[in-house]
Image (cartoon, rainbow, N blue to C red; front, side, top):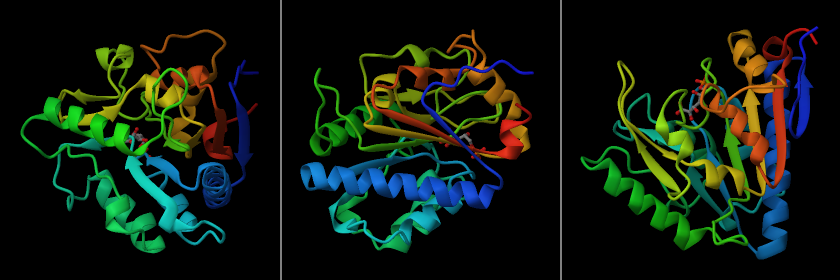
Length: 247
Ligand code: 6PG
C-alpha cells in the first residue's frame, strides 16, 4: 500500500469528465462566496490541457455573476496570445468566451514581451491593483486553479529551479530550458495566500507526480506541487481514478 499524506481535502472521481464537473462546481461555489463577501471575486487560471473541460463547464455554471469576476493566470509561456501553447488562448476559448466575461475583467499575463522581468513587475502591479490584500499585505485570489506536471511542477515552478524559493515577488520570470520556452509564474506566497486552491490532476501519467506530492516526506525543490501544503485557505485536490492509482 502506498503511504499518503494528503494536505487538504481529497476528492477522487471515477472519470476525468466527472472530475471536471466537480471541479467546476467547487470553483463556482468559491466565486459565489467571494462575491457574497466583498461584492466581487478573482480567479487565477492554470494552463495545460487538464483544466480545459473544467473551464468549459464553469462558463455554464448557474449562479455566478460573471460581471463581478476578474480573471488572471497563474502562469504563461513566452508565446503570442494566439499560439496553441498560450494559456491565455485556452482560457479565452473555454471560460472567457463561454461566460462572455468583459475584456476589462480579463488580465492576461504579458509573457510575450521582450523583457520578462519588467513584465513580471507589471503583472505584480496589476494583481496589487485588483486583488485585495490579506493580512500581511499579500493579495489573496478567491480561487487559484493549479495542475501538476509529470515532473511534479505546479504553475511554472519547476523542480530544481530557484523560482520555488522566491518569496519577495508575487510574479517571477522563468528562464527557458531546453525545448521549454521562458515563462512568467505566480510565486509561492500568491499560492499560499489564496482563499481557495483547487489542484486538478487527471490521467495515469500523473500517478508518479501525485505519489511524490503525497509522500510522507519529500522536498518542494524536487516536487514543487508539495508547496500547496502551506496554503492557508481551503485546499482541495480533485483527481481521477487513473491519476490516483490504487490506495
Ligand atoms: C502550464 C501550467 C502547468 C500545468 C501542468 C500540467 O502552463 O504548463 O499552468 O503548471 O498545470 O504543466 O499540464 P497538463 O494539464 O497539460 O498536463
